[in-house]
Length: 106
Picture 1 (cartoon, rainbow, N blue to C red):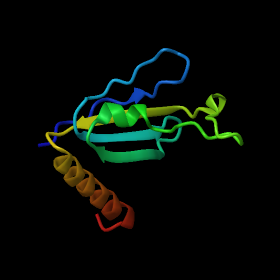
Picture 2: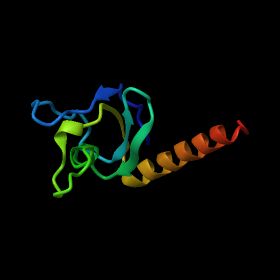
Picture 3: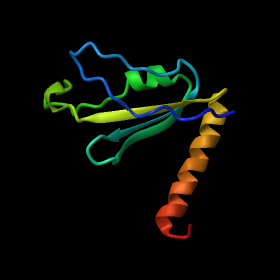
């Protein structure tokens, strides 16, 4: 069973004390660039909050550290499901719909 998508929320920036608001359950997440709406990442996971918290959003510097000064302006939304299998099925349907739309056959 799939629930509805949350509203888009600004992705927390390091050092600002902001928090991710996401379900601690299986589901889907989608992260996009706020300025353009271009997709950054999309995945079906066991724990949405944990996956968003561990998402690498800043580019790495030459020394292997994350360069937080170049943190892109991102926003995210989530969708809780009853199981990871439901999340994967919903993700496959969404990808199929996007591919159909982009190919112009819709």
